[in-house]
Length: 260
Image 1 (cartoon, rainbow, N blue to C red):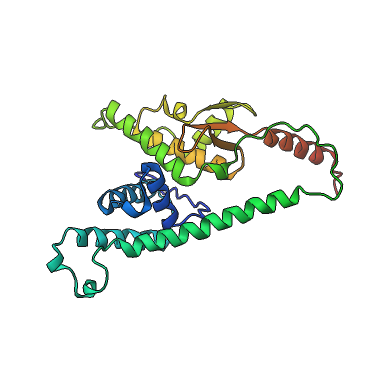
Image 2 (tube, rainbow, N blue to C red):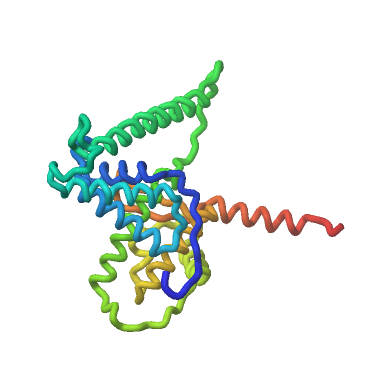
């Protein structure tokens, strides 16, 4: 990001194959019929956005980008001009990638099934007590992946660039710390808003980026939670209730502590 050395380090457990599966799901295409040209363009757009945000990327993301560009270049070559190693049983250069995606999806689905069964088993008892009435919990951050967030940010940035004259030079007025403080003042615990509304008052591209980085930091601080009404749907941001209660408890405990 221009004019700042702020660097984001996220615990991204998803890898390049997760991103490819996400893009396939978003386009609602069969995994066997993926377009290398389209999926490469979309993948590189995500990589560019990560770099724009100065987010550290694992080496395997860059390696997959190189592999996709190689596959794309091969699909543009006439069959007689394909590399020698492609004279084997398969003529379609996509098949190796498709096999990886299918196998990875099998293991990922199996892991998700086992995790669900583990949760169900934890709620099983020899004697079933009366079920207490608990308030409904909002969707957790895990249900809104980093790829959903990047997609939402890309849409916001694209709309901003279409509606603003980026040729004008405007001094950057905000830092990430400034935006964190502003967001904490804007949202009382339990208050929610549409993700897009966070950027309505932004006047520069830099401010849009800084605002998004502040949201990422507040998520890492467990101050905000994101949720979607449905898969690939609109994202809402909500300030957690427990953070205010915990802060009050911490203050009370500090007051009750006797000096040594």
